[in-house]
Each structure stands twice: as C-alpha cells, then as structure tokens.
Image (tube, rainbow, N blue to C red):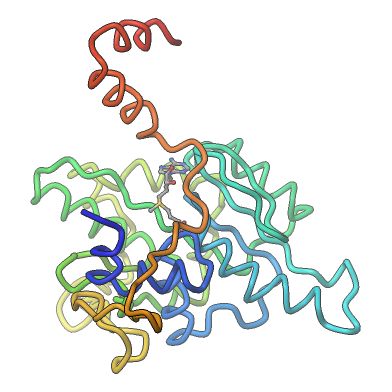
Length: 285
Ligand code: SAM
C-alpha cells in the first residue's frame, strides 16, 4: 500500500504527520484529555510503553513546554516526565527516557529516583497485556485486571477515543482518584497481581465489600471521547491537492530507531538477495 493511499484511508495517520506527531496514537491521548482533563495540575508523570514517543510528545507539548515558556518559570517548577520502553526512542524535549521493562521492579525504582521519592500524579500506558488467543481466557484475565484497578481507584471508565477505529476492539481504561484499600502496603502489590489471571485467584481477590454481586454489581461505564463531529477513523477522506493538482505525501515524523521488527525486515531483505545474506545474519548475536 502506498503512503498516499494510507493518507487517504487513515486521516489520523496523515494528520499526525502534518502536526509533527510520531504516531497517530497522539490523538488518542489528546481526545482522552478532552474528556477527562487528565493533565490538570500534573507535575510528575510516567509514560509506560512509550516508544516511538507520540504520547511523550503530547506530555511535552501539554505540560513541559508551556511551563518552560511561561515568563516566570523556574527550573524547580518544570514538570518531570519519565518515559519507559524496552526500545530506545529519539529524544523529546523535557522527557527523561528509561530503557527497561515496565514489569521489572528495578524500572519502577529508577522512576521513583527521578521523582526524588515523590509519587506520580499521572501514569499513562499504551501497552496492551499479552493475549493467549484463547478468547475466554483472555477476556477473563482482562476483566480481572479491570477489577484489580477498581480496587485502587474510585472512578474507572472505559474510553474509546474517536481516533481509535470502531472496527478495532481497542479501548483505554481511565482510572481516577487513587484510593488504595485501607492498610494496603505497596510492597504487597505483587501478591495481588499474582492472583490476577489465575482462575483460582478470582475467589481470592478481596471483594469483601460485596460490590461485585446483586445490586452492588459493578458496571464500568464506556465512554466515547473526542469531538464526535470530528474525523472518523474508519472513513476515507479525499487528499488535499496543491495548486497544480498534485498531492505530496509527508514522510513519518520519526520512525522507531530500533524496532523489534528491524531484524525481521533485514532478514526479509537478505532473503530476497539469496541465502548467503541469511547465513550471514544468522551468525549475528
Ligand atoms: N504510546 C506510544 C506512542 O504514542 O508512540 C506507542 C506504544 S506501542 C503501541 C507499545 C510499546 O510497548 C512498544 O514500543 C513496546 O516496545 C512497548 N512494550 C511492550 N511491552 C513492554 C514492557 N514489558 N516494558 C516496556 N515496554 C514495553
């Protein structure tokens, strides 16, 4: 598929390039913010699973740059933005990068060090849990995850930004008002997480308040967000033409610098040049 064809088919892909975003996902975070005002008063923020960095760009443009450009700004007033990914990403102004696994405790310790021991006001995450492909099991694990989140936050909402295609089941969970159960010790978190995803764990989860049953059954609201008259991500839009009637497709703003598929592409390229290339690649570490 040519770039112009994707520009026509995917309006958010084209708009991302026009507005300088590294990925079309930037619009998802912007539209979630339109609905939930998630950036208000935020001084410390973590972007989990951040590469290639369009959400970090949103954080930089919404939080860091306005603070930096404010006439009476002091260094101590600047928000701290920490972005984590397994992959490296090109630098973004005001964003501290940590290359690591978000499930590793050492990564969390690194973030806390950057915050001088303080807690994050906002955590954004664009990584999806791994799925097994066994739909019943996947659905069960994901609902356990949502229930676990509901233990820690008073408000939990599913959000479907307008830039997320209706044809995709993707949705984001917005959790507000962190209020952990009384006596909860953060060091015990891993014990709770161990229970999530194991069928027997369902009985062990602390549901003692009874909010899962009968009249207390929990319904998580599902909310569409973003201007509902705005661009529809499932529609094709005509391409804007210049005076001579031509259309110039823009290059991506910042392709990933070391994506996991890079080696696969190299191998594919090598195989189209004969097996010698493949043998050479297989000697690489
Ligand atoms: N929000 C990003 C943006 O706007 O550019 C896009 C994120 S992309 C959909 C998902 C990212 O999750 C990938 O870059 C992948 O490397 C990262 N990822 C997956 N599992 C991870 C893990 N355990 N720790 C850190 N990053 C992870």
